[in-house]
Length: 455
Image 1 (cartoon, one colour):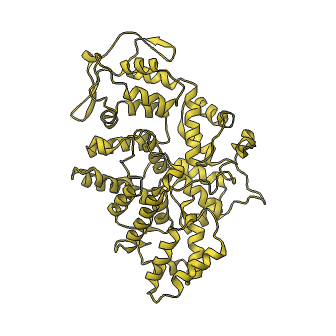
Image 2: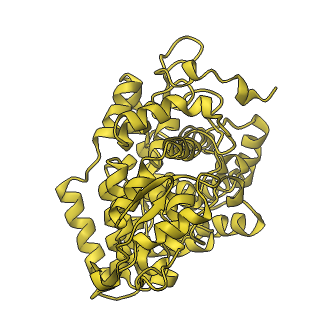
Image 3: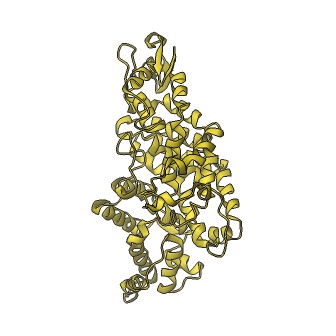
């Protein structure tokens, strides 16, 4: 019997209560911060284990907006980049936010929705449109899913990406209607081709002028339509509402969130997802309660979840930098993430990134390693404002052995065998490099380990 079929839904989504067999420790706290954000430094882990895990989750959920001081600085950088008109430089503005945000879960959810409502600057071209969509995703990231979908339906970047910017009643464009049901809300098998054709008619007359959404009433199809068993003279907003009322929606979203937060390989049954789905529908499609239930659950803190995800390039690189209080050249990181398979604002297609094992192949592994090397060799890279050796000294790390233990504690979801630790030690201990070069070589080797690709 598949192990997943043995997961009891009543147990799975109950709040995790630490006990002797599964104590709340730095390992589980690090797991929480890796999944609900990008990682935690040593100080954050020390603070977390002194609190109840439910309190830590509550605090992550409550940080669902950015402090004014941080937002002002981040927006100022973005405005400077937008003035260049170069969408590839826009990726660096998001890297800055990922590295610096005090609201990690909010940014992690913004990244999730970017993959869900995938839109690429390769086609849209206009960085201001892409950034407006990014702000939209962040604004609704932990809020009302209905409002998020209604907003994305008339988002200029989405309209351009799915060829809906000039949608005429004589020739309705079916792209957005199809993706709204298949990829955004319901999943395959929960709608028909006729539903796609009828729903597409709702969005006729929706267009863009001067980079802004508007409705052209002369091009709107106002006749009756039949969508998913409902009949009426639906406009676009009403058509979206018909989709949002389908009972398959809450299960579809619960499954996708479950795979994002809990485990790549988890293929949860509808029965396992039912408590999440019922909470989602019962809260009028509010996102935060579902995320909170997941992050607080027995399943999330169990062996079914810990170490059961392959890190995306963003999770690997941003996570390592955040755990080590590091800052670096944001454009260098943004360019490297694109080469490693997760360019921000450059998802591969309308389905977004597949995730899981698709993150890893010989090419992307090489690019991960190359990006880590470029970051560590860059003069702008600092750790807590210091060189790596001085930073480690500030953390009471004064030897290669203690550095290996320190990196393992902060960066890994799985423990290393003694044989691997010995190889790491031997790779740098016999060299004559200065301490900073030695520790950077160790960190480079550490981040290239297969074990470090698991989160």
